[in-house]
Length: 197
Length: 277
Image 1 (cartoon, chains in turn brown, yellow):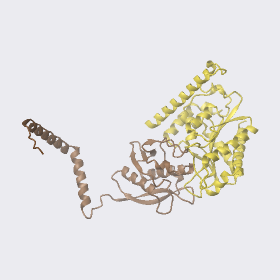
Image 2 (spheres, chains in turn yellow, orange):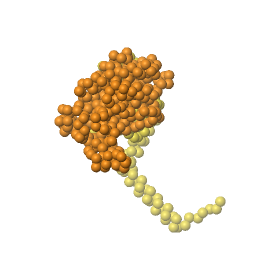
Image 3 (cartoon, chains in turn brown, red):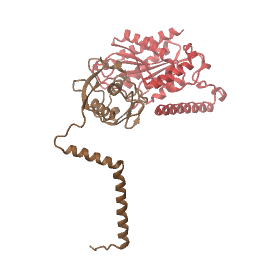
Image 4 (tube, chains in turn brown, purple):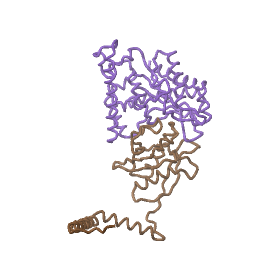
């Protein structure tokens, strides 16, 4: 290997680059970026401590599932982590619906389904973006589609006050129906007459 | 909200495209009415809606790649709906002075919007969508008849606005012979003007299903069915029985049971039509 000599021009260039990098770093660390990095660091150190203090409290919500005994949606208590925002709690609620019942109720969401994203608009519409399995593994049929829709809609609206309506998306987009019946191209208001008392 | 308006715009664009392409098509056909006649108010130029011939549209649910619900023993919703629909068509055309138009007469895909469009371009007086139900619950059973529900509140507001502007029409909504009086309305809310009549039709058909089928009476219900939203006449969706229930799946594939479903709906139609005259 040949040793490469560094010319004075190259030295100047390197020096200038270093200054630019330092200035950029200083700007970033003073602004919001710096805060984010600090937060990430804190979370990491909390995870590394042997017995971490519970950062988030538990919160009990009601999931709504089908029963073999009647046509209604039945509540089942489930503990989720509280906060930090309604979005995180609502995400857990949908994931728990997919995970299914501990009491022998039936979840009308195919277990292969994944929650891709959930967001809530200012006017209280929760957009629930599910993976394609919500359609591909769905048994179809009017009753089955109604159960799937209102299990999600009633669970979210019942537990989270800011959520007034629910819009179901599949793979990031609006779909006409899950299996040829119930119209998904508009947001749903909860239908509590489907809930068991 | 934006999404909703976009959908509305999309649909309006789609149907006006459909309408105008139809106009240009019929104008180009020799032997059809001249263009001036074809250019009468919306839908008036349809050569298939000859005055005096009244049309019922029957919609066999699903079809083609879209099979609908499946039974444990392999029965498919799309096959059962077509079989019942063909029987119902035969019954009506044999006994009533109505022309029957099917949204499909064989195993093909038809989009939900096109099913409503078929009803509207044929100026249907009644629309019957035929289905077999499916549930996550294995022992779910029985028959039910649906009519449309407008589930969102903004939809409800739009419906009220529409009703207020058209209340005069609704005092005499059951006189469809008045062909010159047809008004273009927003297609995606067409059904909202007919909910009362649709409910009455659902009640009567459900009553006949109960007396002929021997299945559990699940009553009449409202739900936001995509296929019903754009239909501009009284429209119901019949869930004859549960294909997801092994016992009822066996019923649904039997010719005698299919005959009874068709007969029950036919009797319901006769009763409803008598109410009007």
